[in-house]
Image 1 (tube, rainbow, N blue to C red):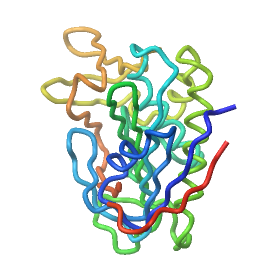
Image 2: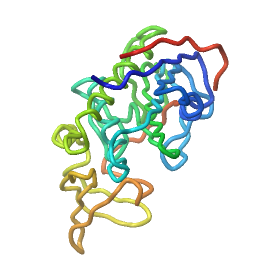
Image 3: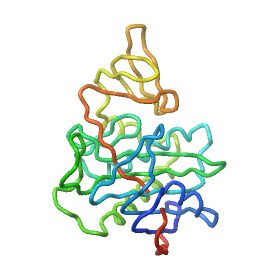
Image 4: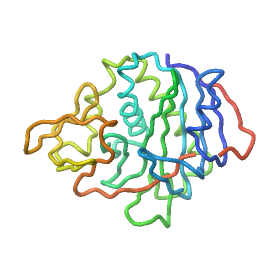
Length: 246
């Protein structure tokens, strides 16, 4: 059974990441909001808010060895893709795509023994900017983000319960939108993505030979052609509603 966690829901927050970290003293907590005012993405990227969005962060203490924590963002992305549906693909290391356009992303941070993993999804966005996608063509209603967040947290914790040796590499590969693509990355590099390692590294064939990229060693990975969307992610403005999940 996955680790039980409490659920705190808000209409609007500043950052689900920060809020979840501050609420985790009494145990694992999932913070969920429909709108985030000062969210952040990987490398400090800003998020735009969709008309309907899911911003969620799960704070917990992993039972994995610390050396394997670098796999958690990939597991979180895989769990999110499963919740979104079979059409959702993964751009390494942390983007969620539908029809090659970004609909979501994940962000994992650590503070001592605590890991805070966030997921942002565009649910419905009729007047979205070019290059940005949403999951639903019609408004799914004001509570859909809470259901999705709980399904995502459950899927993530269930996968983590299997241990780092069974984190889901084959499932990740089957959903990869990066493998087989010519990619470039910062600070500087270019090659063809050929595999995902057991440790979550992206294996790339370059003119100089095979290299392995880890999420912490590069700032951005770009595939051709891919459109990059910006999302929302979570400020506490109301008293949260608390439930228990097990």
